[in-house]
Each structure stands twice: as C-alpha cells, then as structure tokens.
Length: 152
Image (cartoon, helix red, strand yellow):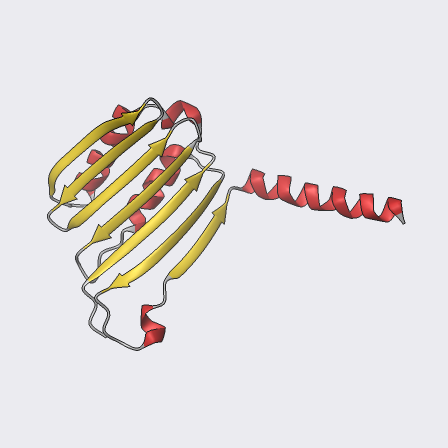
C-alpha cells in the first residue's frame, strides 16, 4: 500500500469558554507546537468571520491545517492534512484537546493516496468523551432505568 499523506478531522464539543475565546493564545500554542514538532510554517493566519466565528489557518511545508472556532457554541472543527507517510496529525489534535478541554471529541483519520485494498482506505473514527461527561451520561441512564421501574 502506497501512502502519500494522513488527514485528520476532529470535532471538539463543549470547549471551555475562557480559552476558546482567546484566539491569540490558540495561535501561539499552535506556533509553539509546530516549531517543537519541526514543522516548517509557511503562513499562520487568523480571521474573524463573525463575532463568534474565527478561522485559524496554517500552511506548512508538510501540509496544512484549519480550525473553525465557534465561541458561542463552544465548538471547534479541526482539519489537519500532513503530506508525509509517517506524519502523525494526531499530535496537533491532542495538543488542541489539552488546550481547549472539550467534553467530547469525534475524530476521523484518513490515509490519503492509499492505493491498497478497500479495507486499507476505510477511515478510522474515534470518539473520546471526557470523564465527567461519562459520569453524567451514566447517571442519566440510571435515573431513566429507575423511573421505568417505578412506573411498573
């Protein structure tokens, strides 16, 4: 299987508002991370698309990434494309997860330029839920079960 690139998309839900509104902090964290991981940044820009919608876009020698940040929704759409077979775009996503502390993450990893079998090109989809969110979800399920038993 010949692999040209790796492409990760991630949805970060329920991000902490204090950090999600600090676009300069997010841009600085990305710059530091990219430098530490030895990615060559060609350009890194931020845009205010509306009062609660920001775009952070980066062009790298090794690929590109975008982050659409919706501060009012506490939601970030992350897209990372790295043009190296051994690249790990998940490193950038994990750093953003640690910075923004979302309640839930849904990510999809695609192997781009894979000319192998259909099984080789299926996306790898992962969902990560923060521990407190898991406790809340489990508690809600227990309450529903107990309510059903009381009705019987």
